[in-house]
Image (tube, rainbow, N blue to C red):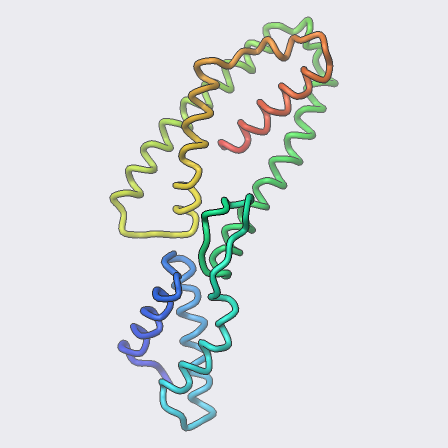
Length: 205
């Protein structure tokens, strides 16, 4: 039995009351819950309200508030299903940045004698500063667009949370970043500088 527009609106309002403000997650949940209620009404003679309560009880654990601590910020909380999605995206990003940083760092160390390839080091410095400037400018434009948009997705929230990171650190790099660390005699310092520069640039991308 297909649900009415009013019944769909009731589901939508209940999701919002449970903290599902993200349009991408809300639309997905709305479709799932509506389909489950429709399927349930096909096999019993209960009213919508009763089937509605039954299905939402099933989803209760996914709608309970939670936080992921340091991964997303101790003060950033929301329904489990939303936080899981944002956390999974963050974990995937961290994983791939770590893998790519490892291989890029090894490639640089094995392919170049950094103490002699000064021109290559200067090129890395200019590339990093150019990326930081570009990403910083695009982030400001993106933030303005989001502020004027009525659409609120989980990815938009994640983007907004990272705006400080995206602008503050690039500004520091543009103003104060120096490639001298790449030329340091100590191999440990050299590796730390390369890892920092590569991983941070990958995060910006």
